[in-house]
Image 1: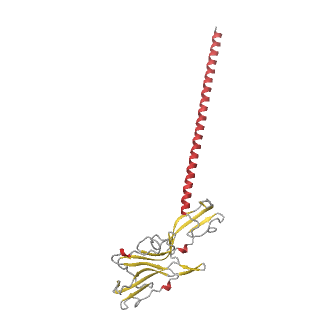
Image 2: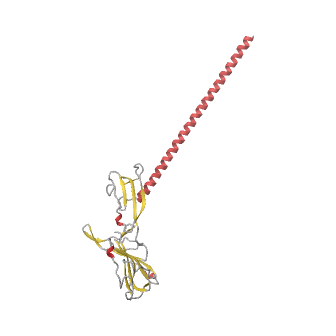
Image 3: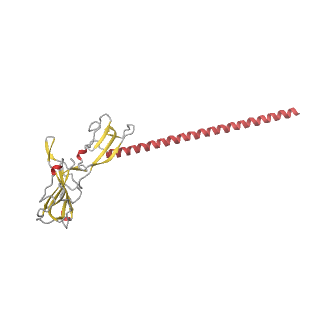
Length: 282
């Protein structure tokens, strides 16, 4: 009897153990499958994120290229660039011609390469570095107090615009004036370009100011004046010494003679006219 009970108990325990093992095996399988699903989910999410980032990066690169291309014209003589295999339109590693900037220049935009990374591709040519310069303008051609002589009517106020001096109820004076000379260029004669502003070339200009005459220094060797009875510090009706200016001069300030009226009194001396010159940079 005891043997039969023992045998029955043994079979019962074995059956329970087998059922438990079976159930545990199923749980393990389910856990494993869930882990695999989670892992696949994570991989899928990562792939989707990478794809989105790649698309976004491509978009950003396109925007950067558009910005670079809009600011960087390799054909411009005011641009220095470093190109690949001399593919640039102005030859290998072209330098900007800054001699055309009579009053100096500013850097408008600059791109420097790191590890020879291509910064811009324009018309199929790759560039590793570039500098875009801008000339400092000597006058504002949009001002109605400016007279200018431009090339091919490119000025913002039309061909060879004249200052509107009717707005100066109490008179006016010349604040700055510069006139061009003829020069030989490629076997032909042309006007010397005095300024290039927003792509337009100017051969002459006069900047007026409303109101009274500004003071000047009669002792300066770059000043011409008409004085009363030789009272000026450099003698009667002194003339400016323009020979000291290697690249010529331009008029920085001027008080015109008007029926010998006194237009300035400096240190007790009366002046009826004067011209202040400044040396040109080129």
